[in-house]
Image 1 (cartoon, rainbow, N blue to C red):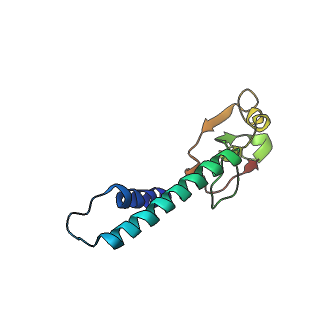
Image 2 (tube, rainbow, N blue to C red):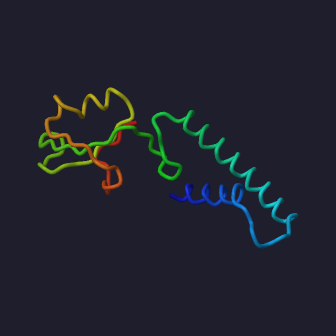
Length: 119
């Protein structure tokens, strides 16, 4: 969300039109800086996406591409659902049906902690 807010602000500075203030020198300098920042941020985001697979956040440096809630009495010792995340096909196969009968999709933001995090 923070990145979208910064990008939106920079886009308004570059493509917006000032109808009241007539100090064009300062305005042109601000637009040049905004263009430079936009180009830099866009380049960084594209490089980050191309370099990192599976995807990961800047803050939480755990790469994963698959998240589920899994209930398994044998593995976890109880019948409740636990959050599981995987970063490769072997892990996904281990935690998906038919090996795990009680496996449901989950929004990763709703998981307070990860019982299994394989990357």
